[in-house]
Length: 288
Image 1 (cartoon, rainbow, N blue to C red):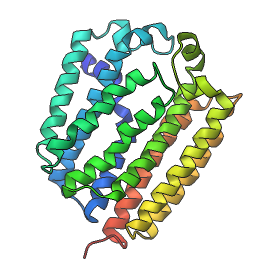
Image 2: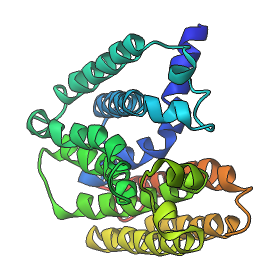
Image 3: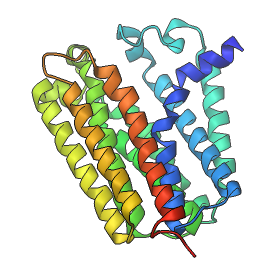
């Protein structure tokens, strides 16, 4: 049981709450109805498998960096609580779960799944050569509503990509927050991030801008989908929480960083989904 806890901590399983609601968002909005328990089950397995694979791959690729970083040196792999072979096996099992789910969803998913996996592998390397790494992480999570939409409809359309772009910028913004705590280490190790490249003050301004555009994109998606009160109320609340989140972090005070990163972002993703689901089930999006 203790080993299971170590694996779950390694992949930060509790942070799945960031991505899962956006996958469900895409699934509900795809046909403006409840997608069915079977479909939701396979989407959930795909998301958990994909995220677990991505996190395990990240830990493997960044092992030497994590060993040198005081903040990450106590993680399971650098500390020796898990071996490299343990994590490789875990990553392959996770990828297998993802592929099992993919082959039980819409047929088009069987051809498109590599486009979801490639960013997972690319992301850990990007910090070694570009400060655009935050956006690659954004792509990883931004594909969640796109993938779920495709899994339900078996087609591609513009709306899920607008929602995905909104998620991309939301994630890129909070990843910049997260990178603030490693700024000195990144500079020392010659790693790339927006805080290391542009400084704390500029990073906070950029995050506010990305989050503003993110809310605009959520609104645009709602207009294109002809959604109503519940959805837009959810986006308004999410925007208010994002504004509050940004107010928590000051250039000279990063003490509330964990509250902004973990608590607020988890709450925002859940709220956006529940209000969108309410719109689909009870509002203008309901299929009669």
